[in-house]
View: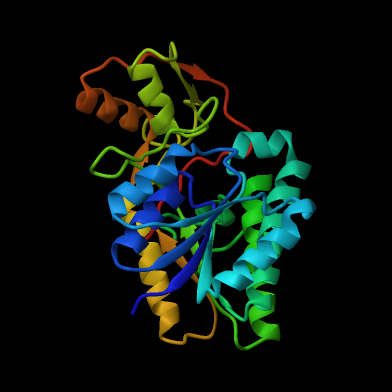
Length: 308
């Protein structure tokens, strides 16, 4: 059964793949994005790949000046629910600018919650993160792992999860899935959409891609003295198309009238180090990836990967 879904942050890397997945199966979407870390061309490519149209509202969910327009647009759209992917997402940047991360990430989530409540569309799929676990768990990590995020970015995700759980307790009509992503990588098979951030990339794979094509001189590997097999950080890398399918599955789960809030990990179930990822990218691209070892980045942990 097709659904009407609001996609906050739908023009971004993950959002664009989610939109293509949902539109290709017949869902009707309203994308809300301020394009601060996305390209307007992404909308044209979403339409091209899904062979369908999509309504777009260019607004900032965290800006109080945009709130009335957003609430009106969502109510007029008559959604069944929403997927909330909007927000800031760089660990290092969050350490340097914590107040900005709390304002933007939590503020945008609260606006979306208020809008869905006003529209009586209380299905909410939240783009959370494995950073909520911190470094106190034994790998692999499952959803019962302890939550103790080590940086402001992770804490914003954790606090939003807690807000959503409190809302689900206060009102039994809410249906909520917190999707705890590990590390999304890759691109749509067409090559028409992928990870192409504005400015300097914060994630490993787009930075390597820019080094490979000569846009940047070298990659910084943050630390080689972690207690891992080669000293570099270990992460779980999940393909973005699989991640998009996870969002579709979450909507289908909520369509079965599931009440309350549930946490779900989205990962590949295996950890790879940064140096292993560099070597794999080099083999696949047949390009050299010069790198230098630099000090550990504040807020990072040594190793985390999902239970399979």
